[in-house]
Image (cartoon, rainbow, N blue to C red; front, side, top):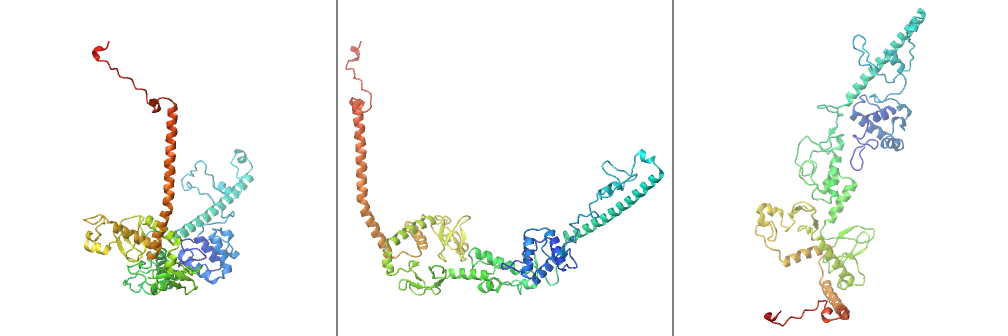
Length: 513
């Protein structure tokens, strides 16, 4: 059956996960064993048909048994299935089917028997028979009736051993033949049921209803050939793009055409379609997300946000401020709300976050979304499909058309590079701050921030002056204390910690003795 994610399974396992012996075991129990039980694809199709015909309460124990890797003896199905598999991989442990060691030297002339290999009678003992031959000299000297009885008994045992060996050899040949039929060597192919097709991506065989009606996967595809792709592989391609948050870069698996909404609805599941519509909604220009609890919906808010800042959600009726991207502030206008200290602190926190992000992030010039580069070169492609230089935001199409001069003058790839001006650095930081803050900073908020910082400086300046005076007074008191300690040690020279000077001799050299 086809699961929700597009994979084909039979009793909870895929084609690759199933075992031939267990598939034969299940089909034999319900008398569904096909004519060619050694062909893996035939067994899998028969197993799928059996699962569809059973009730869920009957098929669930079989799924659990296969998932847990149960043995054949623990099969939860009908008891009629308790038998050896057709390929002979498992044999019963009865005496008649017990393993019989083969003597590799039996074909040598003269009855060559190396040490360790017994006679046929010895092999008969391994099979549970008793050998009553007596090869000693005392038994030879017995009467002729005992010798004849022993010879006849040994001949019967030899014949039974030869029969066992021949049966064992036939079993081995049958096993080799069945094993060789399961093995697919180079140049061989699996027999595909009539009407089934092979996917060129996953190389699995599916019924025709698991493939698109035409070889053209999307509405704009233009490839006419015999190669076909199954619907599960198409769904995986779409799901991979959606997991990366992309809606404009989901390509056809056989050509560079893009998937559109009608193509996604044609092949996708309910979850895939819901995810695609959500990403398309998030990429809608002017979209405002509802901040109501347990809502998660969004809608476009028409008109000027400053004149009409209140958005009422169509789903839950929650009010959201489109200017601040916050729940609506009842009793305050947007200008009055900007003067609140909480908004000033929020702005400072957003600027600090933007400063950290600007080290390895840029704002896409096409969709105005943040893009972070973790590794690789400076040629970036945004989720919106726009390609540009990460360092200077120049269009990659212009770079390929014009050359390196298409880069900005401050870019390191420009042949005549110049230094980035201060206003350009401020503009780049402002763009990142507006992205983090949710929009440009209003004039009321900027004025409120300046006034708040002025009040803060007026409040902190006397405190800082008082702290500086206390620190200077403490340093002066510490220096005076050290000076008193040195004065008590005696002498002005000693007070400075220096050795006393020697008095010079004021005597002429010729007067010295």
